[in-house]
Length: 184
Image (cartoon, rainbow, N blue to C red; front, side, top):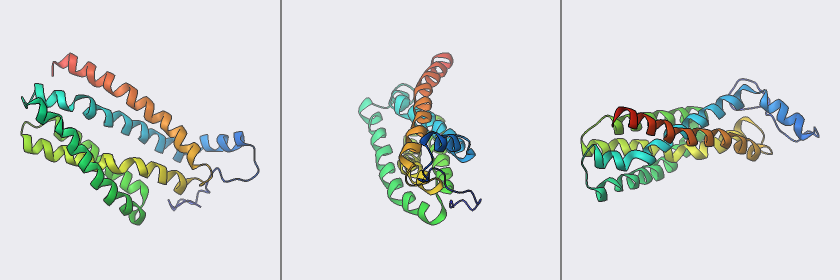
């Protein structure tokens, strides 16, 4: 049984069924699709700050380039803290809840980075983004074995990574188009 409390059996446990039957059952499971969709959206939202944060800080906030590129370091520091704190926290309160918290931190951090003009506030929102960014990745892997079988967790994460790739590919294109269209 899974830890969601919904009473769904774990899918993908070795039962002697052909692998295609296991994948067929997996593809019919709403949990697989919902978590995959969230992975796509996380992939979409993560790449935009990495692609545009330094340029935004230099061109819009008039920060020196040397200072602007250090904002990526702030993301990294926040990521280490997020992984160390939120990963273990998910063992207590549940993966999905902490995944939603990470998504909220990423969203708040991204919006805060985009809509402020103060350097210290930019650092704060960049760190908030980093907290969510650092913790989210390991939570997907852990949720694969929580909601499905440990035997199929690697394959499930591999399939979810396809979603991540799609989100990661389209986000810089769309964000770049928006930046070009709006002139900012």
